[in-house]
Image (cartoon, rainbow, N blue to C red; front, top):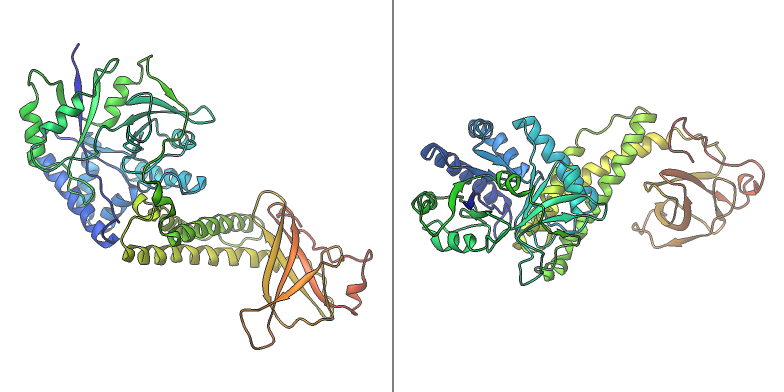
Length: 470
């Protein structure tokens, strides 16, 4: 039986790690330029690259190079893999972030190249959550390449196996043997040890090569080595190839095992490293989700224009989920960059959220009552929630009472305000909130007529027609 070793030319590029993103930007362009030059020199050479963010960098800074890439993609010699914005940490991001990786990247690839990626490509991520097969499959990805955890960290049923999620979704997975890169010189030992991993029922296998981490990609020496060794009697056929070509050749094998589990544990200490980036990331994810919900509802019910810059904010979030950034393994100046970029995402989210909730608040039918001041509390969750609310407020006296929308007194506490002058106060109280809705409260003088409306006329807001309710 003939055997084939699919030679996968690639360049793992860390846009941020022991360097900042500006250097990573340069390395992306240099690596892509090198790959295009190798295609001119060798008409059978094939290259693959992930991360939609990298392609967008090239599109924005070098349209001529981008046009060359489009031509090579159309020829089938440049394989687009990954289908995500970057190769992120695959444990820390929220589920919605993983979905957004697929949404933004696959939409970009279809728009710019007329294709989407079918091969997931997270070759250096430190672990992989068990829920990913469902997200991958629903994003159009049928196959998955990874390296970590290694055989010494987790036993898997084989190099090639069906990875099944809790919902039954499957992707065909391949654990890369040894390394996702090679040195720039002759690499016969790497080829031979990859070939030795080919065991029944597999008569096809993959060998990844190309200078990586700081970019570089396949070198002339790499390509000449493959050509020299192809046809050697004790080696399989060496074929310049694409990952999907390999997967399509083996996916119909009936004896491939199934694995239903997460893939851990590699570099577990990273998950306790640099708490700052993890906190900034969760704040940005949650703020964007909250802003999007209220912005969508406001556009529907009040006519408030939906913000055009949410996409930009999400791209900042997704980029900083790159595994060497979010896991905490990069140099300290890189986290100054990440802080600023996530700060931009938070600012965009805050601006959109404020426009949305203000458009609601100014349309709530709150009766005017002398001596009372309204408070509107919004709940972005899709479930009813009891929350401790804190807010900066104007002057509050011992004679004031806090009332809910039914006229019932609500216990509250005055706590130290952020401002220590100007008669400012900070209120703290427990609010019972409807799902994806809002509720109104009033601070009134204890002796005011409004504060005596217990069981009489209520201060309930008039719900906006078609809106989230009260």
